[in-house]
Image (cartoon, rainbow, N blue to C red):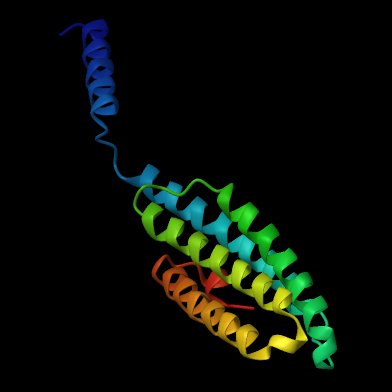
Length: 151
């Protein structure tokens, strides 16, 4: 086969492989690695901010603490939702963000319940803890160590 014909044949084979999606798999691994790096970076940033919040010294300070905490967690959620997960982890990642939304909603509701409603606030915090545990389980399954760390 002449040299030009060989080049043309190789080009057609490469094009056919690319169109068929028959790559070596490195692209999929790279996408997953990039996703994990991005999600871990987001979680590390916001969980560090959450950990730096001053803990309430007395029960009267709890509502202010919860407002600050949910503010940081809401920023984290917004940043996590900006990350496009690869299909292999998409379902678990979406559930992880749903769990974080639940944590935020329950902590906001607990803060809104106020001091006179400690039983209701306690139930909401318990529900938030359950969602947080599921979030941490999913983060572990997705190999997102920084997201598994909790706050």
